[in-house]
Image 1 (cartoon, rainbow, N blue to C red):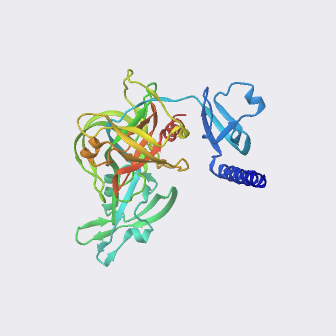
Image 2 (cartoon, rainbow, N blue to C red; image 1 turned 120 degrees about the horizontal axis):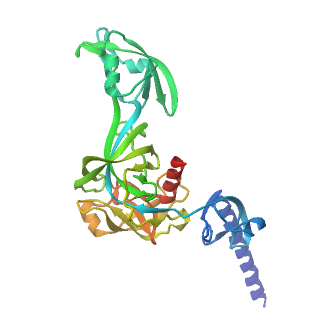
Image 3 (tube, one colour; image 1 turned 30 degrees about the vertical axis):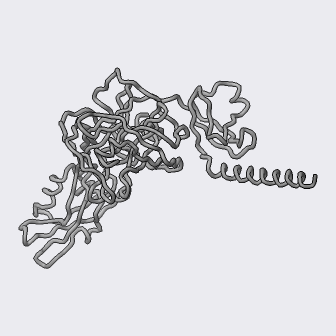
Length: 397
């Protein structure tokens, strides 16, 4: 009898401790912003559920924002959160390769160097406080439109001192840049290497069949020399074809090799940390649209990616979602492992150019491939499709 009472007492203590742990765990892990779909059951996960206020429970939950109570086991209050309810988005998953041509806002400094002046070696950029990664916006009050235009202005020699407006880390600054006559090259130089555009290939993730708006890459286009996000002014996308592949191997990322056809198929609106976004010139109205999954609908386990890695066009390949990181604000929301032997034999796993490949699970678009793990090219990261559609919506509103 005493043993039974002791057992029940210990059981109650254990349940209480576990419950308190789950309440505290939920308080810190359940997000302050929760998303749901109009007309569908709204939940956080299997442990934590959402309860609306009495006034809101008396009517259908439509699009909008609501204050909700998050409960453990649908009974024990954990915290209050904001619930955003929207309609289910339907898009066409792509997997097509496309070429990108991006032009910078201003001119990007990719390298600085000394000039062999008559008085000795001098560094005009260092003296002006300019460095690699800065973006030159204006010279003497006039906007800089291209690298060639800037080079011509700075090398003439009829003027050797210039007022420079530049941007660094999102903030604008002003300085004075002096050019010096190079003894070896017989012209005035500013001691900088500059760039005003970039080009490459990537994979389109999805497009909206109604508007033609598209999303691709799942991460931004960075300058190859500075490693910083390319300061974007405008750009376009062109059709491209794959003509080869350098297979990925441990310690070395592979790469798809493509050629542009220079048939413009769309314009680019934005280059940001969550991808490249724009609008296509035309879309296939007969393509099948599928729903976009919310982040809580993504599960560890089997999935497929759609990629173009040869002349066969977009094909589906098996992958495994091995880890989900819903708290990541950028483009590493899940860890992906390539399990399809056919894809591994072709590319070695994830390679450059596959970024943006749509990830399909349970009939929904759950995300896009973004990065490869260099030490194991069969593994990489992916971004949630929900994040990409929200980013696109923010650009089009």
